[in-house]
Length: 233
Image 1 (tube, rainbow, N blue to C red):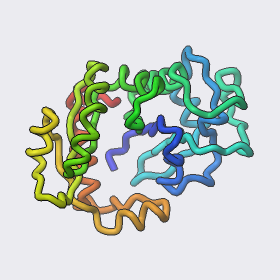
Image 2: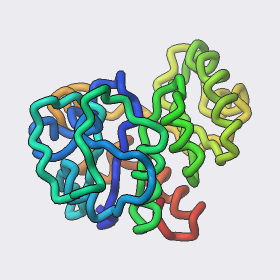
Image 3: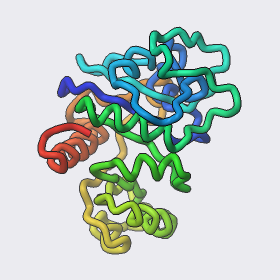
């Protein structure tokens, strides 16, 4: 909607693949199993040309997914910057660093989805982030689970903000969650109608600016842009 070129990077090899989230599992392009990077430089333009992309309200959303596609056509025009990877598909830290750095240099908005156990590849993304957003349901057990994750996030030195996802079964307020974790609450989000069904169909139900998910996402994006003085990443 803001016409920003955006790169969505999947750093969770056990998450099933972010291309499914976007309904892009059949879109031609490289995934992590076919994208081999050994560090160094790669250009953002080469990545956007090689990776699957989906239309997003007039903008461009490019996704680098962990979903395994062993039969994917790897013709991409990237030349020597890419090689076929046949000995595993979990992204390596140097590869994640190369992808994130490429997006930063070009001024893209780069969004990395990280697993809660924060392997080395996730740490590589964290060390390059301008803002870390921790999403926590308004539940006591979720707050407890967030504590060790938060400890590792603080080690990265990157500012961490909290998004609280409702509803709360026990009446916890967003301010209660923030106080328990010692984090500023960036925004709170109530359930988005039809979200689970839409995601299972491979689409994001955020066409309306009034959608709770869309409002929360806009707040997070504004915070990122504020952190970098209006320039993306």
